[in-house]
Image (cartoon, rainbow, N blue to C red; front, side, top):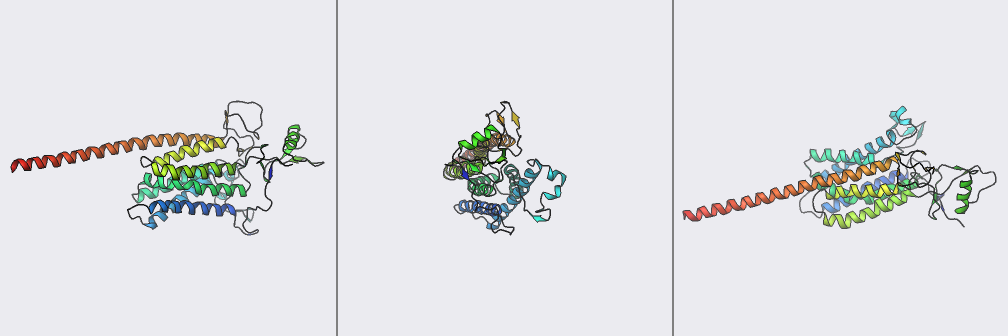
Length: 340
């Protein structure tokens, strides 16, 4: 009996074999379309008129920033091979050694930074309330993010560490382990994997962390943002700060199960317990992406603190102006009464 899930043999990265159309790219288009539709659904409930071209341009500049940032982070900060440092022209060149390979490799954190830059620049140019529009944007974004992670699963990339869980997946692109190692033989036997005579390498089941993220950072976070935060946010900018913190917490936790980009990649290793990086580690050992998640959490908390203070100050100033206006009208009425 198998206690793991073989990667579906019918699942291909290409939509149509032989053509440069990939599921991953289609998932990005679905993600952008969903985010736009959910944004417009919120716009339509408002009383003020908002030009649809303005919204389209807002998304256009955000998406451009996202793609540039995601690609730069992926190729320059998370590529262990050093290929793009040696050949930087390949960063945005979709061909390699005469073959069309697309722009393989996008990084979430770089996409976030790039998108923020694109949205803010356009909002400032058009005098858009970026806190208000930013709230509407992040409320719908997680549902689109779900499809991005499904694209990662189809590509058999960004998988997790080895596991004996019955839902572990044997990814065809994962690193193999020597069949001669006792622990490999024990692990294979535990999950019902039969080793063939003369077999030298074994592909063990991995945590499907793409699915974990699609569920937690995608569906679950969207439900929270759409049905709770959207209806009860106390001030503009709250949804943005909440999203940064919530995503950071979820991603930080899931990254304990995710395989680092490099096989020996630890940003912080406080405990050297001899456990290989292929296994789930102690909470004291962190991979680089977890540091980015911590930065998101801290940044979200600081952002909430700043926008809350500004909201309170604005409310106080508005109340003071209202009281002053009331006193002025009362004084005028009293003087008029005295004259009469």
